[in-house]
Image 1 (tube, rainbow, N blue to C red):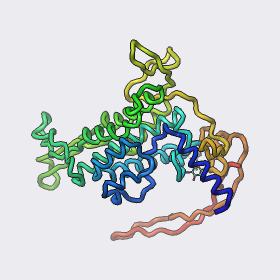
Image 2: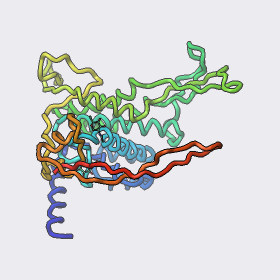
Image 3: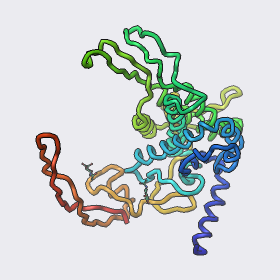
Image 4: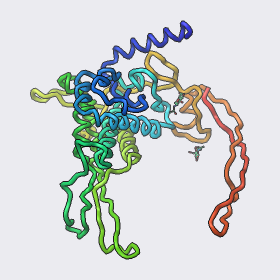
Length: 351
Ligand SMILES: *[C@@H]1O[C@H](CO)[C@@H](O)[C@H](O)[C@H]1NC(C)=O
Ligand SMILES: *[C@@H]1O[C@H](CO)[C@@H](O)[C@H](O)[C@H]1NC(C)=O
């Protein structure tokens, strides 16, 4: 290890230690398996948990692997939704996982908190339905024959359990501080907005039974939307997020839109307190990677276009050869035969 490298690590560790606001439990996503969380003492060793989360971990060992999967789902979805933006949701191998961007009350932080609490609710609910957990199963309260005449299968997604677990595990960081700072209120609001994105979009899925799919008998269950859909909805909320400030109404503190001409945000909207940096330049201290080396689109005028993505620094162009399947023919019966085509495409990269 070079002296420079170790200094950098030390700096990051110190930075991490001071960033008390970060949703540090997301560090669980970096573990390959929490099947390894099979003993209570493992909970003590998990990085990024606060004391009350360690206690929850001990009481809910079997659920912790779902928490880890929820964190991974959230990170993957964040990276998908932000793949064409300057801040691309890349993670660091340090705490906080997303860098300092989320320790400030930015829009990006709002999205990260929402998608993370949604990720935990989603993964825990999934584990309940699939019978992996002793503490929960399907939602048995939805049963019998529906007014529309179909039969409930008795195995609806137990979203109430997943949401309640996410509320206690994810929100505890804010609640333990009394939820009085504007930042705590922001986090709690966005955590809840993330869970609402699942709760308010539950759907009914059905299966037909009967002679050759005649659907004489139909059984249905309530199911969560696919996580991609949750990500799409929260990305829309990110685009329309409301800038807020704290106001005291009576003895309670609330967040209200900074611009009083805007209509108040709803439970499902994302809110933020601080404007974001431009994410243009490499800034280690603030955990910003910068856009140098990012691919951009020469013809797009949007944020993925080279002009905006490269922040006016310019870009260079390489020719790369891509190999594709082409001239595919269907042969009776039943296979498809394709040729391999080589095509040269231009690839643009920010300076
Ligand atoms: C995000 O961008 C950085 C450069 O700014 C790049 O190194 C990284 O691979 C990208 N991450 C993802 C997930 O696309
Ligand atoms: C680049 O942007 C243009 C215009 O928005 C779009 O039509 C095209 O598909 C994009 N190209 C790539 C490789 O994403």
